[in-house]
View (cartoon, rainbow, N blue to C red):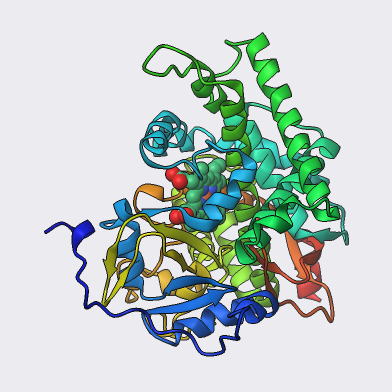
Length: 459
Ligand code: HEM
């Protein structure tokens, strides 16, 4: 019997989570305190059901069942509600494509994300972020969510598209991506399609954001068509691609693909860096160890690809940030045929979700889960079971940019640490806020040069 037809009539249905209200189901906690809610759902068992209005949604909490859904049983699932709503970025882009078109697109883009290729990107990554990092002023109040989001977006644009937007344009693109993403998340949480068609202020903003993104990226494509041999990057792969009939990709597909990659790679990486520096700002000992490593490995010179594998503490900081502060509180799937997961059977059409944020904070998988402890990733310490740490997902829909994001995270962290300490704003309380990603409620930090910091500590 195959995994996909392993369904019998007497399988259990998932238990329903407490707190369901007539008509609206669990919409209130989902809107008001969604991060606490997804963590609470985890305590009700390996699989539970919740309702969003009349829609039933199955929440998979157990790491084994999440792994099974994403890998051996992935053929029974599509990307689900969030995938549908993310089509706002474009119908055919890799993150939302399904089936054979998804596989073809993944094969086409893969060469730009090969591990060997990534180490060749380190110099461009460093040169791209250098003006931002060296441009900070002593005592400057930085909004890390925006600063880091812009850096991540600039890196994706310059590495993958050989394109540098000037500051104002880059900000407009970042804001537009944010607007589209936010609309997609709201539409996933409150899936009432009639609301999506009303001429409300947010729907008008969404329309404007989508057309800004399309016209900005259309300009990049036009420039590249005008000078086709100038670069060898992801845009080249897209422009040179031919289908089985020898036809090139239509422009709107190339556009969607680039927008999809900017969207998938900027906010996630930016938020990760904002949390990492938030944790360093709270713990001078961790910060001291980072400085010690960066000073001894990189020294005075520029960071290069050879340094990256030697920055093992920096890598552990990135791992621990991806665990404790994962940007994703909601990832969706939909059963495309009847499928069994653990003790329950899901009918075709069932909406399913899992939460990397809740999974990575599970006390059954991580001792003292709310403690930020990069040393839990030391090889001599017991490691979490397989499938318990999946910041980039798993299986055929796993993040194509995982090695890119690891390298970028390490390079930017080390670069900033070689010059700056980012200090918390006195009196600020920082909490996780879950909307399109889980970001810090107050992302502001104060830039202080390392020399000044050393002088102050010595007094
Ligand atoms: C810390 C940074 C990042 C995190 C935490 C992250 C996380 C994820 C996760 C969890 C998925 C799987 C979603 C699912 O299973 O439905 C995903 C998919 C994806 N990510 Fe990332 N990502 C990051 C950075 C990037 C970067 C830098 C890029 C590209 C420049 C990127 C491009 C993509 C794409 C294209 C997909 C869709 C892959 C497919 O469906 O085949 N991501 N990411």
